Length: 310
Image (cartoon, rainbow, N blue to C red):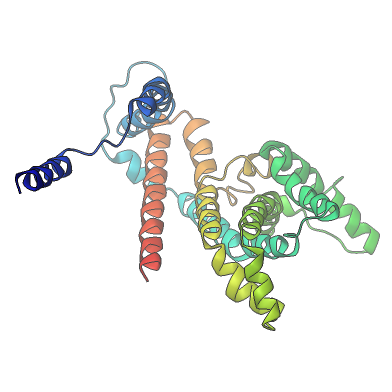
């Protein structure tokens, strides 16, 4: 009986000991690689964020000491600026186009090109090539396409007898023109994410559905799309955050024009904060953008958690 009691006591003692989450072999690489990463993250992410938040409370042009404290005036100037509402509207349009047009197009292409063959691989590469281009290069290419005097678009219009407008100089056409470029540029990236998800589906599941007489569109709707839910979640998150931070394509395409009608939040920051040497004003915009991104990330995570619970 004593031996049994002793065994029970030993098991209870082991259960009460703190569980080791990491052994010595795992601790050594952590100590070697984590500090450099933390240092770089602090230098290039945390400190610039802190500096921007500090600048937002001062009227500072980038030269000399930071002494002119203005409190929340920069935030008030940003919110009441006549072009800030346009920038928010355009950023929301980019989000809407990304979710309603770009992602469905990427999903359709992914379903059509999920099989493995050399011809399909060629098509995948062609669709993915725009994403491999630098944003500035893509913007310059489409700037030439849209050029009202020598571009490809007016040349096509002349060939078919239709007079094309100067799309980048027209307030009505500039946003649809930019949306076309954004869809062309990024849908291949989302397509590859969806293809990776589709190729991870076991072939036995699809084959069993076919043997049961399930139609192709039913397989897509009830099997393939639900089984790549994690890929869709990642793609939607990238689309939303990328739309809020859109900058590189807008500058070479329209530079926010005409009459500041095509600004996004980041190009608005660049035009009215950086170029005009109002770093306090720009800092206030960056803080507001950071808060918006954090809110979107937290809300998205909460909605996703509720869906998973159900």
